[in-house]
Image 1 (cartoon, rainbow, N blue to C red):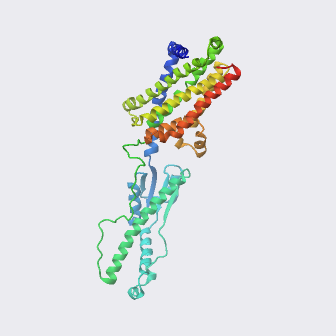
Image 2 (image 1 turned 30 degrees about the vertical axis):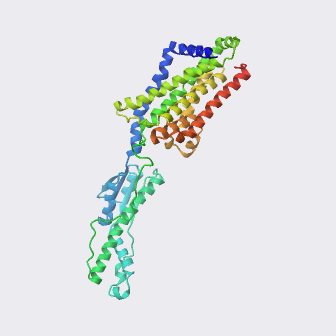
Image 3 (image 1 turned 90 degrees about the vertical axis):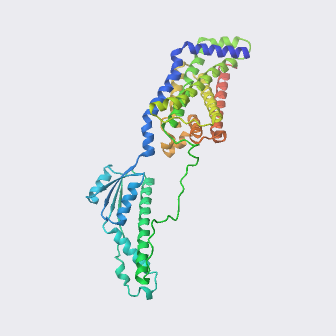
Amino acid sequence: MKLKLTASIKKEFLLLIRDMAGLSMLFIMPIALVILMALLQDSTFKVLDEKKMPVVIINNDNDIFGNNIVSGLSSSKFFDVTVLTTGDATELRKEVASGQYMIGIIVLSHATQSIQKNLNKDIYQQFPEEITGSISLDTLHAGISAKVDVFFDPVLKNSFKQSVLSALREYSSGVEAQIVYKTYANLFKELLGVDMKKPEKRTRLVEFNEQLAAPLTEAAIPNSTQHNVPAWTLFAMFFIVIPLSSSMISERESGVILRLKTMPGSTLPSLLGKVTVYFTIGLLQALLMLLIGEHLFPLLDLPELNIGNQWLSLLLLTVLVSATASGYGILIGSVASSQKQASVFGSISVVIMAAMGGIWVPVFMMTDLMKTISKLSPLNWALDGYSSILLRHSGIDGILTDVLLLSGFFMASLAGAWFYSKHHDGKL
C-alpha cells in the first residue's frame, strides 16, 4: 500500500513537471489575476471608504442657524459642500435631479429669527404672570416656524437620507441651545438685573465613544488587498479541478485504469496519489499568493496584506480549501465521460461558484437575495474564513462554521466519487 502510494505520487509529479506550460499556468494565472484585480479595484475600495456626498446649499438666512448648518456640514468628513450665493429652489432642484449633487439644501430667510421668537414665547410662558405681566406674549411669537427645504437625488438610498436629516437636526439642536441660553440670559437681566456668565464652550451632555470592535492594532482595515488576495487565490486553487479531472479521464481512455485494476490490491493508492500531488499544488499556490500580497503589493503602491499572527487558523483553513478543491476535482473526474466534458463543466461550475461566492463582487456589495444565495458556494465559505482571519484575526473558533462546511463538502465529494465509480467502474 505504502509502496504503491509512493509510486503513484511520483508518477503524478513526473507527469506534472513534464507539462511545464500547464504547471506554470497554475501559478502564473493566479499571480496575474490577483495583481490585476487588486490594481483595478483599489480605487473602487477607496471610493467606498472615502467618497463624500456632494451637497449644495443656499443659505438665505445668513444668521446663526443657517451659518451653523453650513459650517457643520462643511466640517463633516461625509459631505462635499458647495455654497451658492445666488439661485432659487427651481435651479437647485434641477441640479440635484440631474445628478450633479446628491443633496440640495435651502435655508429660508429669517429662519434664525423665527426660532428665536418661538423659543422666547415658550420660555416666557414658564414664568408666573407677576413677573412677565408687563410683557405681551403675543408680540413674542411670529407664528411661523423656521423652514429648511431639502432635495434628494432620486437614486439616493434611504439610509443616506436619514443620515443627512439626522445631521441637520443635530445642527438645529445646537442653534436652539444657543438661543435658549441667550433668551434666559436676557430674561434674567431684564427681570432680575442679574448678568449670567457666558460659557466659553457649550458642554456636551452626551459623549459618543466610537471604537472598532477589535483594537486597530489587532484588526486590519478592509481594502482591495484583503479581498483580492484570498479571493483570487481561492479561484486558482479550485481551478485545479480541470487538470485533476482530465488526468483521471485520460487514464480511463488510455486503459491505464484497467491495468491498475488487474494488479493486486486496491486502486485507492493511485487516487490518493493524485489527491496528494494536487493538494500540494494548492498549498503552494496559497503560499505564493500570501507572499505576493505581503511583499510585492507595497512595491506596486497597493495596500500591504496584513496576515496577522493566527497562523494555525490560516494553515487549517488553507489545508481544507486545497483538500476541498482536490475532492471536487476527483468528483468531476469520476462523473465526466470525456476530457472536454470535464473541462467545460469544471471551469463553468468553478466560475459560477466564484461569482456566487463573492470572488468577483464582494458580498457586502450584493443585494440581500444574492447574499443569501452566496452562502451556497464553498468559495464563499472559504472566503468568509479568510476574511475572519485577515480582518478580525479570528482563531479556530471564529472560522469553525466555515471549517465544518468545507470538511462536509470535501467528504461529500469523495463519497460521491466513490459511489459513482463503484456503480460504473467497479470497486476502487
